[in-house]
Length: 88
Image 1 (cartoon, one colour):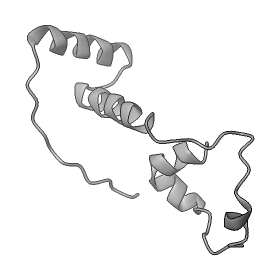
Image 2 (spheres, rainbow, N blue to C red):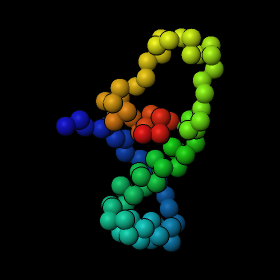
Image 3 (cartoon, rainbow, N blue to C red):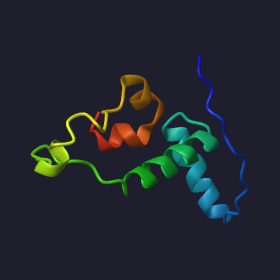
């Protein structure tokens, strides 16, 4: 099983915000840490553009003909940003 490295950070929250975060984490059956990580990930992924269903590549890019490879399933599984971009 592949392990994902994590960086520990410290934040300061007002007590009322911390209580709301704890409440929301309990509702989703997550730890506070997991809830915060999920929330930050969701918020940051929303800013990454996603190709629309009807996207047509520029002919110049199409002419690269395989020079830029599509990500493998392993790469997609390892990177949520790629999954978001490719709509998987």
